[in-house]
Length: 228
Image 1 (cartoon, rainbow, N blue to C red):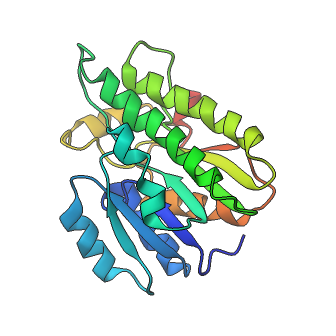
Image 2: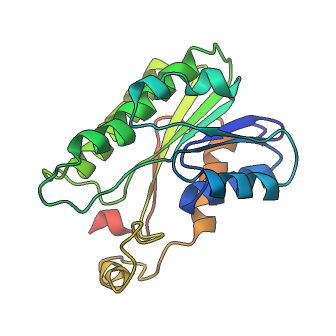
């Protein structure tokens, strides 16, 4: 698939991995729709800095199913959907379980359905999972495992007009608000022994879009973390 001039919606596109993805796709000639929720200022700054033209910002709270249901209709036709946005809480009581399931699973599923309803003949979806998927009782892990299963199901359901793949990053950046020595401890469990560069994530995204024989694939860009 030729990325040039395609319209790409990146959820959570204003900061962190999403920001890097927006920059990479804009650099490849795509028109970017930067989705944000609370990071509107950062989204507008990114919008002004992106090369090319035709980019826009769409603010939407993915924790609201009503708002999520309107996101694509507000964005215009989208050729590539990248479900990057997620929330992560270090909460032993799991009081944020409902929000994590809504943002990390239900919203991407809704957006995939909206994307398919556009009637495209050659569309692509990339969902962001997590290299540390486990069968634990943690609601974050449950939400990412559910999205993994939804990715594989959608790849069959929407074929051959839409390809659906996923990327499971390893330790790229510490969770927001949790900077510090924790990253050094995490890297001890990563076979490659190093933090994952953002360019390795964006290169994987571009690869999945360009290779038209790939659907239903999960690429673990994690230095082997999923093997441990």
